[in-house]
Image 1 (cartoon, rainbow, N blue to C red):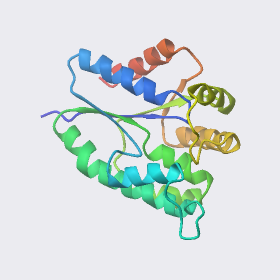
Image 2 (cartoon, rainbow, N blue to C red):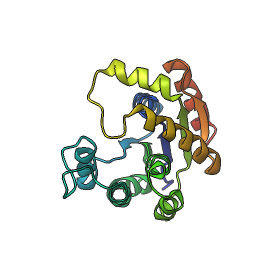
Image 3 (spheres, one colour):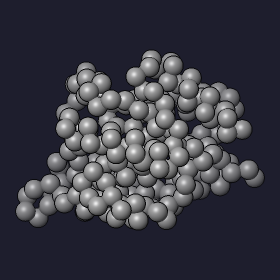
Length: 202
């Protein structure tokens, strides 16, 4: 059986990766492909714990936010579990996997708070995607989009921090061979560019 294709979308909060992942999944399904749409943090036990921590529902022993190194470790644990329990079985069964964020998100987010070399080393053993698509949006544009959503901000959705993350993402995209897509274009135009990149996989 031909393995499925592992396709990852990356971008800061407000880049539109969730919307684009949903559209890609619909497109590939209509083309007759079997598709698993997923995301990180995952919906598994560690991913759920991370989401609670990012929303301030879980704190450290001193009552403050979890240490950035602890958060980095949680993302590694979630990624390992997610790969083992969901992503790799789907790929082996011939199902394409569209994942909203993966290793590059740790390089950008946790690498902006911890030693980037340490973050890279923690994530080095993980499976490489067949294609990583970085939806690049300036931090101020992403902030405006987040504001329009009207949702409570999580731990990372702070404008000054998002500026650092955006810069770290661009550096990671260059170093790790991600294809950069202009995320300031219309949803339709971004989707067209993403589809063209996937079609080029063959």
